[in-house]
Image 1: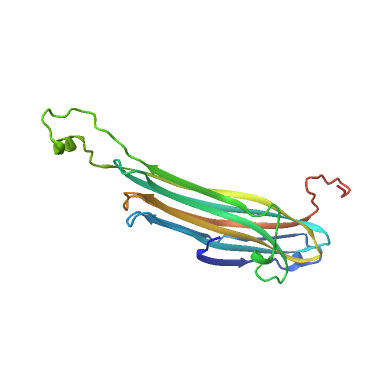
Image 2 (image 1 turned 90 degrees about the vertical axis):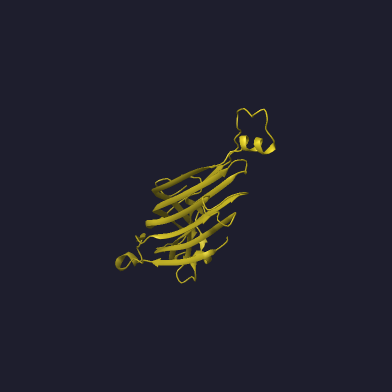
Amino acid sequence: MRTLGMVVAATAVLLAGNAYGQSAKFAATYDRDPVMVSATIDGSTGPASDGPNMVAEMELAKIHVAQWKEVLVGVSGQVQLMTFTQAKGKNNAGESKSIAEGAVGLEIMVALEGTNDPCTNGVSAHPGKITFASRRQELTVDVSLDVVGSIPDVCDAACIADNLDIDGDVTVALGLDTTAAHHFNFVADDLDEGWYVVVACYDLTALAEVSGLDIDADTAANSKVVLGPRIVTVQEVQATNGGIIDETGGS
């Protein structure tokens, strides 16, 4: 993964008191501070891109697990995606294109307490890394116009060019701004007895790109991704892969 403009912001909120007794079966952590990444570019210097720009965010909870048990991890969060694309097309100048892309990836990592950098050294919970939210917006303009009309009977090459030439351009823009709450469940299985840190590892990515043979500053793209309020809940459970657990605990 390319890490242009990497920023890491870690927030660890640990439960205290009775929740950390040997009977602890549930843990949770939450954060309301927004995390944001953006990218912006225009065609003033020709085809170019900004990004992918990335930001990493970590939310950590802690739980005691009995021998050969599983943990069910639920992650809920609010994501705002803002994308803007504008393309300017000139007659018979070929395609002018702008792209804005934003995404939030999410992976749950489980590691024994004291593990250094659990987002790297932990074990990934099933089903692995997912796309929590994303949008790719692409806008293309290709202007090809012909003049339908008459040419004077007496007309040289310059006269013909004057009568057939089209002066001007077409500019098209599209902007989207959406905010939604998302949720996903993960399972870490067959854990040994002990204290574990359960970490929600987010990565935010923003990309802006413009291309074309004859573009200028009016062909532009902008993308912004904001991870808003989020919460991680962890619960000790008994789980099976593709099976059903009966009320006696067998499968």
